[in-house]
Length: 252
Image 1 (tube, rainbow, N blue to C red):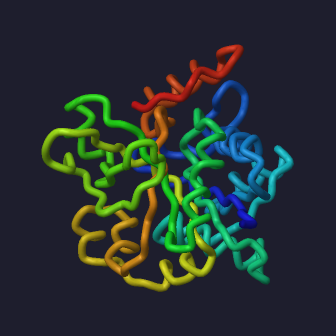
Image 2: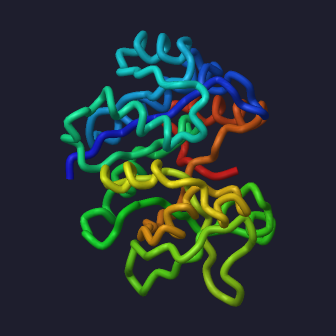
């Protein structure tokens, strides 16, 4: 595999406007994301920017920034658009779509998310972590993945994703971490498709892939990052990243 990591970022955010440029201990959040991706060391890193101030911050930090149409409907579309400039000859056969609001991410997560693509049957890799309690299981902002890991296995096919607690019955349940590794040809196909019925119903983009017959494989992790969506989340990220040794990432 020859991966490239692309971080889509735009200033528009309903809950935390200007989120990519939010200061975390002297650096914009998008630069922290650039750092996490570089630390993973899996391939070149770029930011697909919807706004010029994001691009300027990335370039000041020595990163690669590509301007994209701010009206693009999703992060996946923004990543795909940036690739036309970053890699017009399709030399990179795996594309990691890294959310721009996970500054406490352990870089190991990026190394893990590409591992399902070593199996030619898998089209997309993503991450899951154990659901800790019923509050998390029933909170609709936490996306759940229906997948089952055989004893000793760390990769399993995703059968469905939902905002509801799934599956029913006793046993582990899994919280989805929205980082994706696409085969390049699969991303091309994915962005060409219209939003699917279940995608529109659940408001989850990954269901478009499942409804089209693509195979998504989940990698299990014990701990995941939390997304910065509110002022309280931002303060928590500042506290974690201010520690002399960055604390082990935890979810909200």
